Length: 304
Image (cartoon, rainbow, N blue to C red; front, side):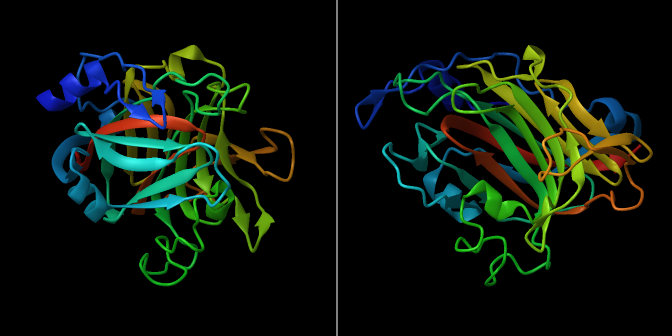
């Protein structure tokens, strides 16, 4: 991927602007560039095709046209925003938000984007480098039109509170989760839903990379995220490293949030309940952090 010159300059400097009196630290530029390369299972079966969606995330009008922001309604002591500044998407949220791309994804695809989590710039607040999270191939359980009442973009029902998304169908991946005081330590790949009829249910939840620094956020550094959904293959790629990948026949860990154990059973991907999703929507997800996003692209994957 060719990163725009203005984005490179902006990321080197990263603004030094003020938001409610809080100065932002500069994000170190990672010059390696996106390789747009496939890995693991996907590389064995697919090749990268045409770009089917693209947003450089450098224009406010385009951002408002292409994306929908769902902020949680929690009381705030710190400012929150999702806006284009200096040619980059800046998002800060001290509680939680989801930012949906309005275009539906279908078929075999790879999502690619860049993100940085600046160091905390106000000691004692809850804004720390954490929670590079995302949904993809997401749909409501009823399959509603996303713009209809009760649809995915209904911000009264899907309101930025993380739990409001528990009944969605789709995939979720996370890097740098944890608690406010013990954060940037977990990784996740989940198959939703986590609840059904307001009851916790068994779901796929992979977490074997927890506390592995090779797969965690480096503050002030740009990270390259790739997400694959191609027939039975699902992948989460972080800086060219496979965090988790699944294909038909793989053993999978099953969890139920009503229980404390990370794993309560094993299943087989692609069989029984654990079928794949091949269409739906993408959304950035975050909480108690500040992220800088750029260069969102979706590629068609073609069989070799």
